[in-house]
Length: 109
Image (cartoon, rainbow, N blue to C red; front, top):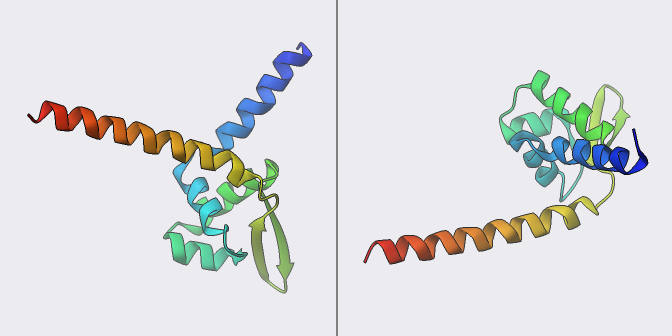
């Protein structure tokens, strides 16, 4: 695989990790503070087995990190730069939504 292709593959794999509603919810939940698996399950109403798989993918991608305190595992954002990736996406979607609203208002006349 050529080095440029490898770079594209790495980027695509990273973006695929973000391409799931539950993983995005976990990232947003951890934005303010670290949380235990139990706290995340309770807040996001996810099954613990599914959450564990999502957290493993996020950890492999380097987005979250974990620490263990006794029997409790806590997760936190490893690198806050992830929000610099997500913020422009939110802005693009906001603009798209506004454009759609304008079209719908025009059609309603």
